[in-house]
Image (cartoon, rainbow, N blue to C red):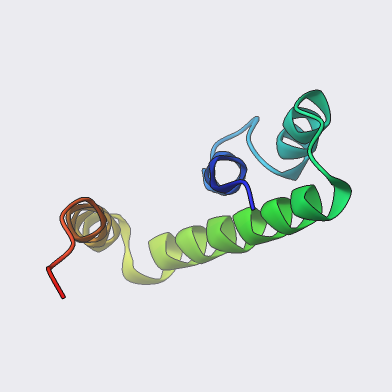
Length: 78
C-alpha cells in the first residue's frame, strides 16, 4: 500500500481528500485496489483526527499530536 497516499489523503485540510488522492493515484498509475485501500484508510484516519480534535479540544489535540509525533519519530527500543 502507498503510505504516502494515505498520509496525503489523511491531512484534514481543504483540497486534500479522496478526490485529490484519486487524481494522484491516476497520475502515478497505481493499481486500482491499492488506490482504493489507500484512499479508504486515509479517509478513516482523517475522520479519526477530526473526531479527536472535536472531542478533546484544540489544546489537548495539539498536545496529543506532539506526543504521537515524538513517539513515531523516536520509538522505544524493543
